[in-house]
Image 1 (cartoon, one colour):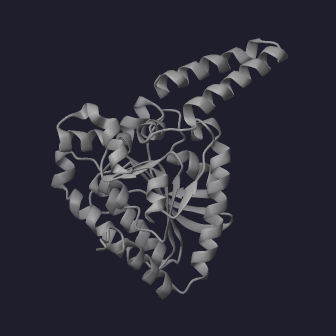
Image 2 (cartoon, rainbow, N blue to C red; image 1 turned 120 degrees about the vertical axis):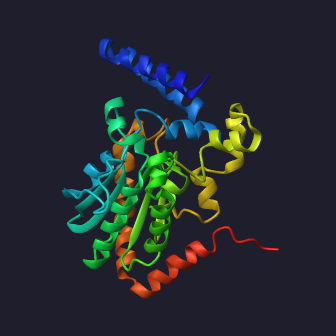
Amino acid sequence: MSLQDIDVQLQELRSQLDNCSVEEAQIIKKEIEKIKREAFTDMNAWDIVCLARHPRRPKAMDLVESLFTDLFEQKGDRLYGEDAALWGGLGCFLGKPVTILAQRKGKTLQENMLCNFGMMNPEGYRKALRLAKQAAKFNRPIINIVDTSGAYPGKGAEERGQAEAIAQCLKQFMTLNVPVITIVLSEGGSGGALALSVADHIMMLENSIYSILSPEGFASILWKDESRVQEAAKMMELTSKDLFSKGIVDTIVSEPLGGMQENPNFCIEQIRQNLYEQLNKLQAQNPKVRLKNRYEKFRKLGACHE
């Protein structure tokens, strides 16, 4: 049974809770927990990909509105235009001012069309860099929230310098003299995610993914066969546990059985606590030491040892 079928089964059981006795409700709740334990206790890489893409999974704006107060959005890259796929602006985290860069997906078709399904154009990356430099000027920490299948691969995006815009983010974020923390919320795909992931500390949600491209793209390129997505997902080692074991990410935020959508507040409180601890730690460091650590963190990635 696929995770989609399991989700439908769980929704049907939950819908019965409103019209049953206390005794029947207890039986239904036990059945729900049993199904969740059997389905989600020992998931493979492809199962985690499916959970990361779950339509009810909280989006970046849910985190922004839950974690930060006094939000003030800033739009435009001052070169071409605005990109709704990136929410960028100011906010306060537990009373302290921060700059927030959040890759935005929608919850409805209309919202997704407005924000291009979370796929940023060059102006989005240039807006991110503009706000990051502003943060450095005013000594504000930067919080990035990553949730994208990748940068937009359209003709117009390429004509406006998509690769250059991403490359500038990679280069400039490495030299920013303020703390940078990245949260991989659901999908962290390709250079579109990496552009906002040059950070002092990277945390991943337990059922999120972070990779060079999608399993479908990997299977299509390597084997010319998109049906081998499960094999591709396993080979790519794109889960939080895989990446934590390799030192690519620093913290895994645990999720309830069934994914973040089962209890969003549980995950948000963990993120809040991790953010608080890491911000205090990074702000206490000497900026030169922090920059050196950030540089070395990325220089050692992919190193080969004889």
